[in-house]
Length: 119
Image (cartoon, rainbow, N blue to C red; front, side, top):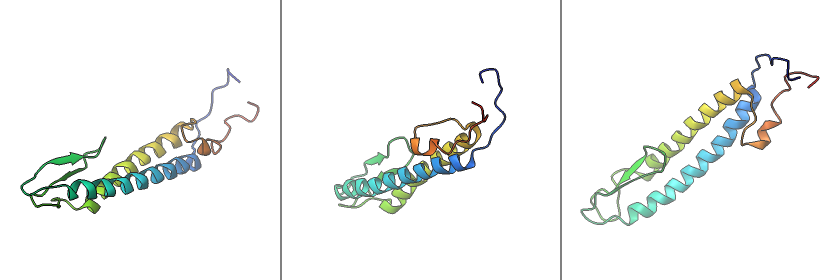
């Protein structure tokens, strides 16, 4: 089988499975961001304008200068975080569909079709 060149394959079921895994990650990150935001904003003091970014993203919350409040709503912050990870998932889906290479989501790997029935 080593001398056989694999034909081009599409793996849409594999890609969709990978995206489904990323959807779960995005939801978990969103849930964490809501709690993180509520804690951060609850600790804002009068005149406080400090800000905080969610790791790996451009999503930011800023104290609004009022005690216990942020200038951005926590739902908007959490939506930003969720959208970031959904975009990552969409990129991973396209890569999985085109490469058909097994990845870190082992439950999805079984959806990759064999490229040659004798191998």
